Amino acid sequence: PAFAAETIEALGAQKCREGSGSHEVEFLAPDNAQVQVLARALRDGVEDKVNSPVVVIDGKPCPDPTCSFRATKGQSYKIIAEIMARSVDQICITVARPKAG
Image (tube, rainbow, N blue to C red; front, side, top):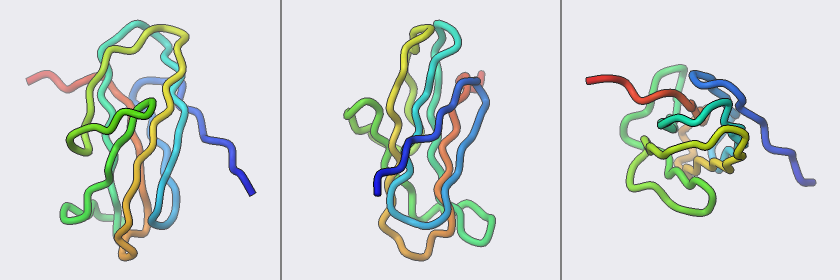
């Protein structure tokens, strides 16, 4: 059965899915803004720094689990985080403004 992707409509929001494999969300940009996508794998509630998810935004792979891009207000973006490590309990995707510094 096909599952509908969860939607993120606010900057700073996070969506998580239990288990390994892939997690897909749709980001509906609320503003024109530079945004950062962060994908994390969790094991026992703690980030697994060894097994990092691969992030794909609208079919384009990112070089690491943190990926920045310019979002256009009202535009929808398909974000996928994939990880094959079976030891992972959760995959989380966060969409936020880039941190200053």
